Amino acid sequence: MPKKVKTEKHIEDRVLENLIELQKVHTNLAEKFDKLSKEISNLLSLFELAARNFSKHPALKASEGDKEFLDKIDKLLEQNKTIAKGLTLMEDHIRKKVYSQPAPIETHAEQPEHAQEITEGRSTDQEGLITEEYSPSMKSNNRPLPRF
Image 1 (cartoon, rainbow, N blue to C red):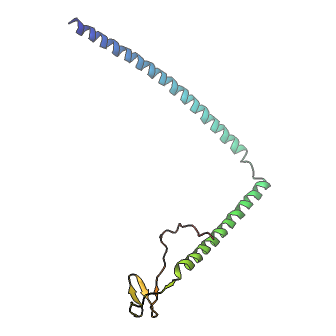
Image 2: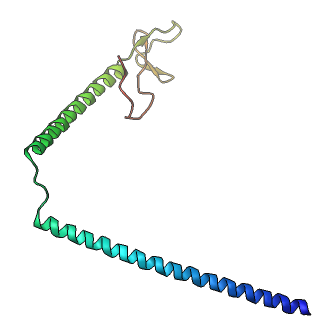
Image 3: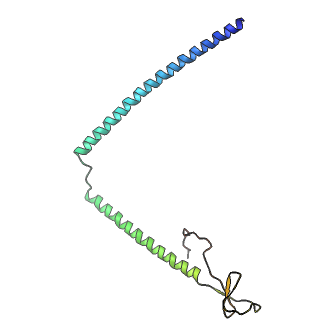
């Protein structure tokens, strides 16, 4: 029986130690929150001071050099748009050229000569030549331009 009393006393001591440590942590946390609130107040006052100074002295007025710089950037943007349109038109032209011209392929004499007979996805014209319709292998519009 003395062991049971001893373990209960040991548990009570451990609980008290844990409560004391928990109170220390809470005290430390409260101090840190106080410090944080003071720093936030200082930051807020700094923003208020900056807002007052900004209202008294409006933003630095754009100098003539800044205006020239902005005009140059606007011109570059317009040139970029023009170049992009030109590249798009060239890409469309190249795609039409590459994918829309069927190349005639000669067939064997065994095939019947019917006008526009369709055989396995190919159409046969009157001379017996098989013509294939070309289409892009990928249906995506994000393909790069071919290099020449």
